[in-house]
Amino acid sequence: MPPASVADGLALEEFFAGPSHSKGSVTTALFFTEDFTANFSGTRQDGRLLLDEQFSFPDGDRLQRWDLGMTSPGLYTGTVRTEGDDGELSPPVAVSGRLAPNGVVLDYDGYAPGGGDTLLHFRHRMTRQSDGTVANHVSVSKFGIPLATSDVVFAKDKAALDIH
Image (tube, rainbow, N blue to C red; front, side, top):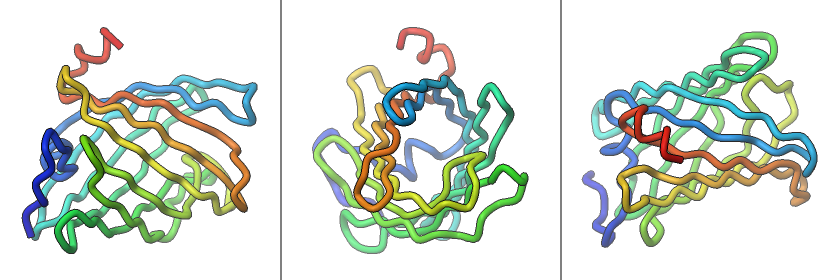
């Protein structure tokens, strides 16, 4: 099913098809901040976006593997698997999402890249920017208690990340 129309909206399956890149930082417990980058490789298959996100953190690389599709106008569903501290991908966890003005919101209970087996809640708020990049603000919580935030910029061209 094709994405629903949203004025100046964001269709994940269009933006992330092919290669893309990101840079960002994660702040844990309000006092520890760590920078990271990621490279993406996305393909469209049977109306779905299959996306490998290869993070590079100071302590090593971690993979996150997404499978997302639009199930009805404006609604995404899928799964995400995350590489833990043991180097293995977690079992897939359910992801739900929806189109929002100028972007997409994704929610799921999953695992932090390189983290252990603690199930955390993640909320991604992605917003298309006028320069063609996408800003992503991620909130991480457990039992409704905020634990971390991450601010990320996605770009199709790595050079676009240099201005952010």
